[in-house]
Image (cartoon, rainbow, N blue to C red; front, top):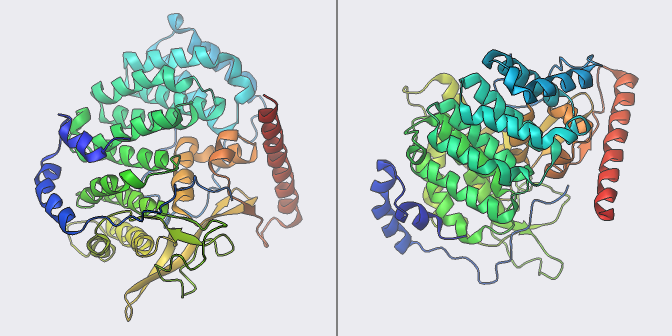
Length: 480
């Protein structure tokens, strides 16, 4: 992957005044504080195994979400396969359709595929559906039809796991992001592009290409896609970039450039932009530490605070060692994060202030020691000025609790939840391979619950179904 900042700032693409004005001073700072990456750095490992909703927005962070136990309006709809089949036929029969009819058919398709894992029901129609969805996106007859078509593409991508989706949809989605006149459509298309990249067969080259495209959007404050200072588009680009980088093994050479772009966004006037940028910074610091290998000396890296009980995520897992510097000036970054974690200006709302405090306290904790993952219920020890909190746990339906002890897990959970919204638990327990492969997190059953033996029986049944489908999918892959 080429030098990101050079590609963005020297390629002739649009750059915001804020980013351009800081480039000279940044160069001086780098000369005085060069990165000191170890010569013996190893490749960072891939994340280890261990009417429509409004969406899963940036402020739904590690500190504000505790349950995915959403109400499922489709729970008693035993006839959903027939209804879905009828809606598919309506979508494919465009010649007899109206704008309102297409809007309703697309909305129904999204509802049904969100709350049901419809891989078998959609498999024979994947190509035709993508073509129909693309026509709705391309024509942009109404904002609702276009955004629902983009949502339908996302849901089909996460359901079908078809490796041709990315190559077929990427050109249209990129044009929509650049050319659409509606900011909401641009943002929806950015999220859709992310889903198609991860689940539609882009491969590492495609992922890296889209990460550069998204960084261009962020670095230019949306100007590169004709969305100047549009927070919605910038937040979407930040969120999707974070999702994509969790798929990349080695990000050492690009970490400095990406971190600087995100640090610039910490001065945004929109709290959602600031939080999304901060989460990506925490993710970059986390990626600079990888598990100790069998042939490594256990004392080869003693950086960071290993002494207190709060410092180590995955306490039962492998020791994490520093491989490189995620950013060249961590002390200055820590001061900036500390300021956001304690901001008290009257220019922002109480809600935004609370969100900034909790999120940036957690982000700062990770930057100070990348062995620490996302935390919630953060508190400050004023004697030592250190932040403490609990590892995030998320309730999935009535059947289990998921520990989100690493930022890569949080970023992927956020992305999956943003796509599936209230249907996340259904796809998880029904064995959707995209969900299980991208969030291989062990779950434990609640020790106590109001449902008693009924809850435990339901949990065992769901776990048996999920494990059976995981086993079947694994062995079918081996036989191909």
